[in-house]
Length: 502
Image 1 (spheres, rainbow, N blue to C red):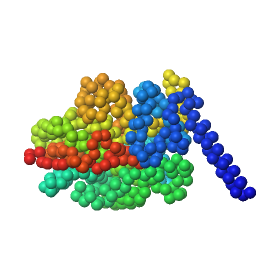
Image 2: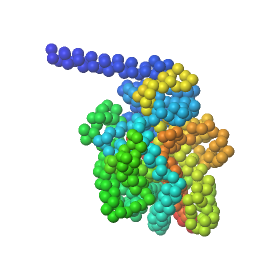
Image 3: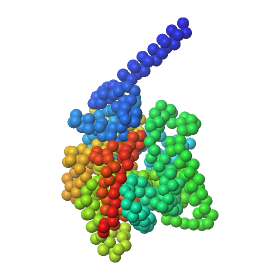
Image 4: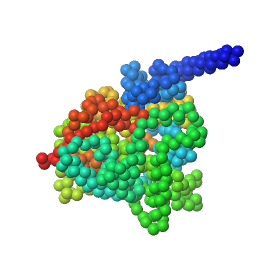
């Protein structure tokens, strides 16, 4: 009898799940919106969730399937959760800019007990708005000039490492070199200290940086099925022991500066000043930054600052190594700039290097740091000029890589062509067809720093060295690493290097 009851209850459970899934998977159809056919229980992202494909490749395929049907927008499912995919640039503009306040948040997991999730990228609502307004002053022209000098200093260690590599006749794993350079630069700009990653690959910052970009296939499952308020009590830490490392580091730096009355023009100093803000001096609804808030923002600036720039430099060098004409044009522009400023590059001169700018922009088109940009609908929203209503709490995915690789906007999108970004070609393209840093009020605050760091890294590599693709490197098209939100090649990219005067 007990066995019969168990079997019956199990059968009822299976039937209930089946009925629920069938009903749930008609959500968009019932709203009058086209949808891709989902697969139980993954929805339309089975290959992403099972690790068969990367987020970039998975969402690019979704975009291309929808584009073939000439759809302006459509629906998909992440597990059982409906997600809205706009393809029409007008709809995208409304979501990211005109009606931004309906889609302010990214919808990523954050919890006050998981300190590193309290960063600007993950916060929503008034918390995000208040912090964003404070941090905007971090990236003024004056601050960028200060950071420029720090970045240029780091190219000395880069050149020393490259000289040693040339002497040993070794090829270089370019992502490793780029990461060590951007870690040294970002650590100095963030914490006002030296990491010496280019000199010592075993340094703590490199070790924890590598952990940050390790694939985590379990995270989307946990964050989908376990309530966010409960997750921290299970021992779950989205960024692992990186929190302990940064918490100790930041507090030690702050204590040391206060004790010795030290002032530096870096990111942590700005955050310290915000933390010392008295209630009487703050605007209504604002409060001083806590130590945990400061740690979370330092985490964001460090990880986003080094990781996205390192991947941009890596992908740029992958393309440049296969196109000697592009490589020589960059080198010629560097030499002309050096002549212009008597051998010592300045912020102004580098900002006027138009060809290098085009190379970085084309790199970010083919390899945007994030392939899809999530937005959470915070208020029921009727899509203009349609009958479709997006319910509060629905996730929207802006298909950045799909748009960047759309031949309607970029003919022969697989071809690396910096001239796509000359003034004439840019004027011909609609807006919202190049969005490596997002668009609208929530566009990446550190985009200027990322562009500058990428340019200086490429300059440091190209100035006195020539690169070609090593036989161990993958060929087109690159397959992206699985289990990551940002884009990284799944295989190491090796380059051969020689001195330009050889």
